[in-house]
Length: 376
Image (cartoon, rainbow, N blue to C red; front, side, top):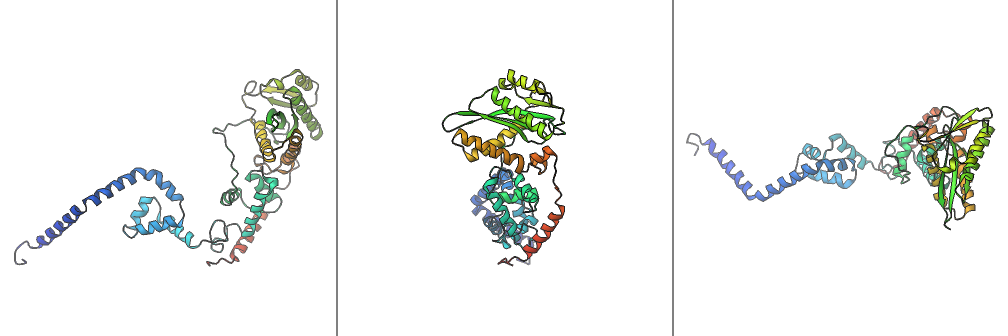
């Protein structure tokens, strides 16, 4: 055959015929692969984000199986994972540590919280005293009392990892409300309700300070009316005169409820020259809502639903304990870790923890490097 001119094309022709025969034999397989490929292209936008968040061993093992039939770059491109991310996940699986809540070797990743610090965090999250506190308040409490020095983002991360999520519904649209520059500049009054097991619907009125978020006055009654509002407002006036005797004037923000504008309320305001109080209706006299006091209502309801008082007396005791905890002990996120009473009286503690944070970081490194990890 090699004696004829052009014989070299014969071998190419034979190879082409053989390939064509193979394609014909596997026509159905080719069609199946093409359909799967088209389906993947259609669903990739929904699946890829989920794959990027997946770190489990099963997923990594399946990727490695695909590497046996497809190039590594092709597989990673199809799954939307970078080569660096893939090797990071491999490394993470190889260095899993049973001592660490984030499953990372303490020695190789010493900047994570030490075991002792995680245990402190667990104790604080499990403490019944803080059952109604958000993560931010617990974090500030731990820092202020020298228990644990970690950033707020670290607290949120570990609260999710440890199963102590404390997420509350957020409004769909955030609007900027009244912003005070000093205590007693703006006061807020509102009434919320709680139904006892015996069917009695109690009315709970709060008066709060916009600047410090402190509850200045309150009243609980089995009847909803102006007398309840008057009692809470009178207590608030007494609080202002006690802590700020030289304060001259204040603006009281209320909603349009009739209990806030009764004759007895107007008489109390008129008969109180010091401080001089000007009452306005939210969203009518001013463009702002009464949301600051509504936020206080929500926090107080959290305490009530936690205690579940069975009688009016139990509800009254619950309100007293809750207000004391809220005003005096519970650090407030909006106040950068201050309690409402501290912001209201302007008796501010030292909130600079930079040196303690630096020392905690150094101690964390030392403790994690000394850990007895079985895989290291």
